[in-house]
Length: 434
Ligand code: NAD
Ligand code: UGA
Image (cartoon, rainbow, N blue to C red; front, top):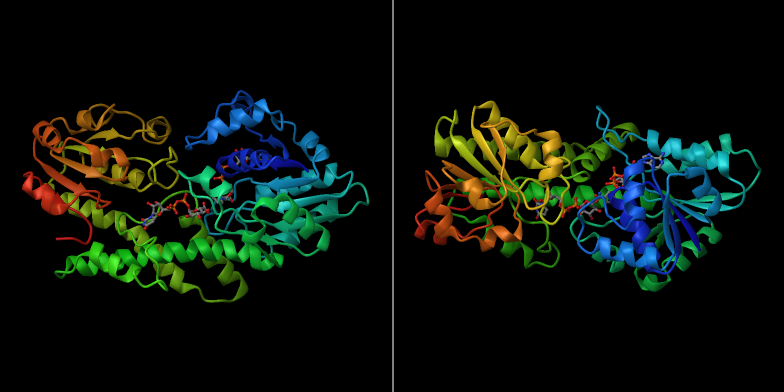
């Protein structure tokens, strides 16, 4: 099958490489010439474990190529995956302009039957708009189908998630589209769930919002723990032992960030409003999440009193470990709050510094990027753990303490053991634990 991938961002690049790895012929296209130029040379524009190796392997096998020529990609493909961004608009809804733009271009280039697959996260009933747009602008009277195949990969384990999926949701409304989709995912036949299109679209927003709700719930419980002798790690462990609840996504901390949970929860609230269904439950989920940053910065203030000209080390800038993605990263709001109070910040991250510099420019002595966690800790009055990169658990804590002006740690991810930290002489604060 000849597959065209429209939009080679996080999802599109992984989808292109993943489908090529499944032995399909794939062309990736994007309006961003730099991304395409890099991908053509076997260089990934994102840090994602294992991606670059598979990109190179499939380029060499010649079943994967990249171009900026969207019209040519449309004409040369049997199946088109729409992987463009669907960012949040001011009113919370998903901005569907990119999807509409691509639908229009598909219509103009439609010369034979094609299956158009929504891979981007889109509001339920989007397929109707895609069909209407293509019907409105197509120049030849040829048939086409629209299908929904939402993506569930997580950044940091995206390749693994794509090649070993829990489930593949296939929303279709014709036998032909169903057959093509099942053939494409032949290797994972038993993990495919075929539904109608509206259900497939809603499964995606519902899944992300449910996971976000789990995170906000455990964060609320962490607040209760801080008012009692309960320990959030034990509470989460005890809850998670019930298979009906499950142990995953019960890590209390700074709340969820990233390019999807925050925007998808808000988009679903707006979908509910538009369809006359009250989704205030999700407004609370969003509000609880937003408050996590204030609560964390409050802990820093409580530990240090005034922040003016206090030196603070910030460990971890990406929204989660194993990615360089900083979209909606909690670190950004934390840095801005602390900088507003006049703190001097040493920022460290193993992968996200280049992207962060674009959002938070270096401004010595107020904001300085450093090369190691130890450089960050030098003369610091406090050290904050904002993203739980594995390497932080391997730090030489005695050395770290020796470098700091005050051995104060405020850990937003419960990355360390409180007893051990206190035994080492740290003043240690974390989330939902004594
Ligand atoms: P992204 O911004 O990284 O990538 C989108 C790409 O589309 C960009 O490279 C952009 O240049 C390109 N694009 C925009 N208009 C185009 C056009 N007309 N022609 C060709 N290319 C065009 O976004 P992303 O993180 O990959 O997310 C894409 C979609 O997938 C979103 O709907 C998102 O919610 C969803 N999603 C993302 C993830 C994730 O982990 N990032 C996971 C699951 C689903
Ligand atoms: C999430 C979903 O897990 C994917 O299934 C989905 O495809 C993707 O969104 C998407 O639609 O974009 P991702 O954002 O890459 O994936 O990362 P997660 O591992 O889900 O983490 C999201 C945020 O929640 C991170 O900021 C993380 O720190 C936070 N989190 C996660 C917690 O605070 N506690 C937890 O227990 C788990």
